Length: 301
Image 1 (tube, rainbow, N blue to C red):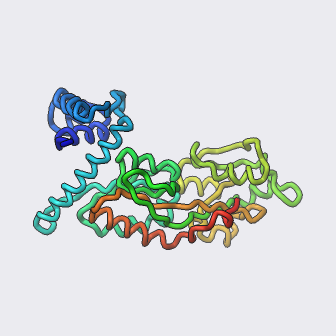
Image 2 (image 1 turned 45 degrees about the vertical axis):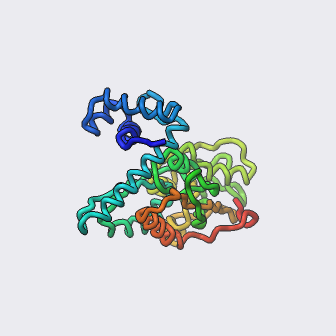
Image 3 (image 1 turned 30 degrees about the vertical axis):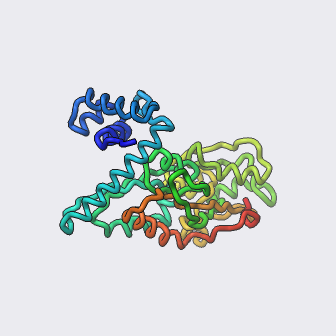
């Protein structure tokens, strides 16, 4: 089938802007024109592509068409840049998904690399590593740091290494909740990043704790660490983010030898694109500081 560029542009605009009316404003056309383009596109494909909700959302078929539309736009921008005079190609958006803990640690080196690229504008989507693959499926991003080892359709995947988390707490908190030779895991308050964060629960489960202790939610990597330092509760913190906190006594590792190794992968569109290749090289280089990917038997909580 031949998909018309203006129809694909309408689909992308609706998803990005959230509604037919906002897409029409973005494209400088009438809402009626946007509706006609989408109806024609759905007729040609033979399936419903958009759920007419607020905001508008793509169906499973719509996600596949949306991904194709974004890929086409990327290739067109790269062709324009190649044919333009040096510096005259403008900038192209580079949408990438990354989890908050990576963004607060090793992924900063990717930002440093991207800062020297005058032809791209980085668009970061911060999403839990266990859920970022969804953004690839819908075409919202062209690459994602994810914990999903199975490639999304139309993507390639490569291992990056593991993020190592260690359970730590402020010395005062540990002192208050120490019972004999260990701590009261069932009663000691805990800090959680958000509803998707199960790292602390994995530590508790390994300790045989089935109840939920008092839980504070702090949805920021920097704020999470600050909350743990302040004694609000204990938490599993990326080893790289700890710096010298343990050495200086601001934090202490909780009793035992617990650690959580979270494997990370880089998934990207399987598309010949200079910009995707460039960001992939930057991610690969930055991730070289991660722990080597451990075999399943070597991982423990």
